[in-house]
Image 1 (tube, rainbow, N blue to C red):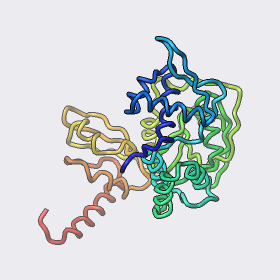
Image 2: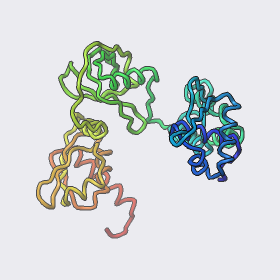
Image 3: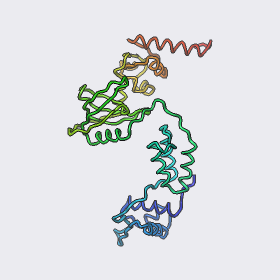
Image 4: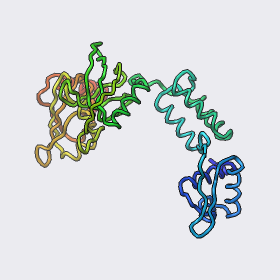
Amino acid sequence: MKSDTSPMSRALLTLELVQGSPGITAERLAGKLGVSERAARRYVGILREAGIPIESVRGPYGGYRVGRGLRLPPLMFGTAEALGLVMAVLDGHHDAGDSADPVGSALGKIVRALPESVAAQVEAVRKTTAPAPDRAAARPDPETTIALVQACSNRRRIRLGYRSEAGSEWDMEVDPWAVVVRHGRWYLLCRSHRADARRAYRIDRVRGVEVLDETFSPPADLDPVAVLEQHLAVGWEYDTEVVIDAPLDAVARCLPRTLGVLEPLDAGTTRLTGSTSNPIWYAEQLVPIPAPYRIAGCRELREAARMLGRRLLAAAGSLPL
């Protein structure tokens, strides 16, 4: 796709360069823009005519810089950037064409602020693309999410109102460590003072957030994604244990961390321990393991594996294994 090289586009790029490198010379501007010094000065003139205070200082240490009182244009997206943003919104399965939806409304404002040539292409993608609904996704209230993100950033303890999947409700005080998005669901990773333990709560089930005066320090070297996935692998109805005849590195590459904890038994054997409330699903996740394995200690998972094996054999018909 051909890039937009109009004078206004060049002028906006000039503004971006001056902002990013205060004191930049006409020579350096010209080099960055790929034009002559005379053309670079012309783009500076366009900005000044638009009321943007571009100051120039003479001498060996002089150059262009943005003066006080600058009010930037609302957006400075190129076509690829704007299309990428729209695609990201659609990929999140939002209804990008619904002006009543906060995401659709925000996207509409972005499109209206873009140059006409860019906006036409963006609007075409927006109107003609139909995202498939993600039934597993659970998007939380934006204001609740912002409050939690700010509490994490400011390291402030919060009082959380929560409703469980079964409908039970309670309040608790937690130290919010991080907000993590996983497969269309938003989680708050935290330390619960009520349980005196690490917890992960679905943000779409949070009923209220009250920021408290107390502060906290999160665990050193916290990896929120890894901790969340480990947390989601424990505490379910059926405890699982699988022994795999392969080294740890080979197994770790083909299994999601949400299945449980991997540990080496010896140089060529690995043990997976976790839990699940859905043995059939768990058995299906074990299929990609490129090595022999055996299920220990969970009758329900063994039966699920047998059922899955019979289905696969039936699908193969009389073909030899």
